[in-house]
Image: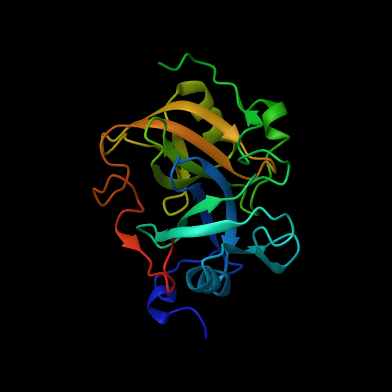
Length: 117
Length: 117
């Protein structure tokens, strides 16, 4: 079993064979995190309903929540117009971020030097 | 003028000096697109209020909407917990995607082989 060749043929990968996956809470729209998938991680995500990534730091597959319990149940998966980004809508159990924050973007807003309307 | 050194020191860049930027409509939560920034593109985005990227295909800065009119007015910018992804909330004028779709993820949902609850 491997990724459907029709899907695989549409993917544009980085030189190390990965595609970035944007992970969004399906109902609130919160952007939770960015992770990376190779073909096998995408295949597992599409066929198991559990968000599965390639960990660049550990060089291993990573089923989100297997260690932390903070599982992501997959609701939908889409490719972008260029085939080089994946959008994953999930139902996130608990915190998405390893810091304990709900999303990986909660802690570090950057200052803007004009006044947004 | 260049990127604030305090911000620059927190960025983790790809080997080609880029950071992926997730672009989200600030009020509806739609994920519009993924683009790439180098330090200068982030600096311009933070100081002008117009979303500015590095185009990998054209090797040039790209002020979103300068050609199409489909401008992105920046509402907020945040770094993720690892400093390797940017989340940009914008007010998107018109279509975000060059295909004319509102988002770059509208056209290509992938089939799931289980039944999501």
